[in-house]
Length: 273
Image 1 (cartoon, rainbow, N blue to C red):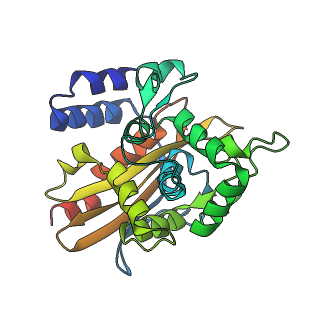
Image 2: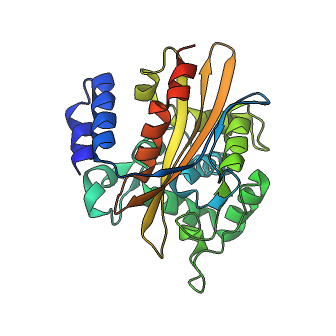
């Protein structure tokens, strides 16, 4: 909760706010392992580290990126402000951020699970599967938890749908270049939703786009974090992904992944160019 209170208190000073949040998270984090860190420009890897870049994990909230593409393409999502949906049962520790009326923009900003589930419920299983197949996203498995028949609302949440870090990289790069088998308009609207204004203030003119995600191992309670996105500066386009594991009893694994990415020495050097 202290992280979200910081977010509220420093809204008027975004650069200061982000610096403080990253500093506090750095101090509070337990040790984690970088399963994969990959940064690519064109066909060249600028950075590639970790032994698990080909291992598939749940996409967790990074799946909101393809979900936004699907939502816009299907016509359910209209623009960053429509539709407005009202929360049903927001979780307690995020109540201030997940309750009330929400739009596609606030859905992405606050990573609201119930908004995703409202969207997939409106799509229906058949249409949902059709679009995931069209995007060729990960293993494309929307069956959900075994025996629960809950794939429509749970498949991407530590469940059946899985994707590797390098597949994440391929997907986000295609989105950045408008090369998905989806209309350019839907891809453009999605990119606008994942623009990271505050993080971009720390990157020397690079404009960052991306999304975090936190995955929970149902057997060990280990929390894994994803941060996937791309950065642009003038005519340059760099795509990136980081996946970490090792956090226990944390609710912010994806934020740790973002911190590790931004604080990485090689990444910092890249953003100095």
